[in-house]
Length: 354
Image (tube, rainbow, N blue to C red; front, side):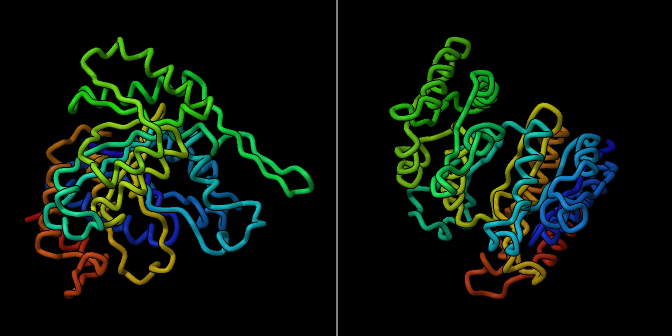
């Protein structure tokens, strides 16, 4: 099978972890007789340096022509520390999501048996956790009207949603729930926000189309609390952009490290796969960043974008074995000898090719 994949390393540790995902993906291609055509493109601060904008048209065209996109991270301290900067790397991320129609962010949260002691939560609370957030990605407060009043002394950001935007993410949630335990939670703040009331009304009206799915409605603050008290009570959760951004980062600590969790952003034109962590500029160039989230994102890509479940399983099994044998970077080494980013990628690719 020929796979055309756009490769967007991005900023900070992005290029380093992407290199390892490419290494592992190429090993899978060799093992299963696939041909991967990688097409690299710039995004984020790397693109600003060359094109003056964080998501240039040339990158957009490469993404449109690809069957899937593998993405690293965006962000650079020289922009973070300049509140007056007119162009920022993160603007490229929002533009990419909007222009490619990537309206649904899929973020699984699960535990690794060999790493249960790495979580800040008790083993008995997290063991067996297996949930998925579907975060709406192209609407809400991140894309609403914003501005300053009173000579800059007052600021406002507007959260706006249409019924159609809510329906399309809810359909993804209901469909995923049907494939899992037929349990769906709609996360909102309907006791305060009008946009949340529209979310709740819209999902309630859709329940009749999915009679087998048990639907619950919970306020975002209650979910934030229960995620660390009883994460196993959740299976599939749908929510708007800002709530999802916050809750998925909270959920990521359940596994013990943000460096372990993959994600996918799916939409109208293509799908994008990325680790949930940021660009971690402090570690850039040091060959110490954990590449496993990016490698597991590649596994999601094989399974979801190309329907290659066996290939995805081989990657996940290899990652689990690396964790059991402590072939890991310093963030997971338990004070023992750690491996570099590139050494972990090489160990996994060699294992796959055995």
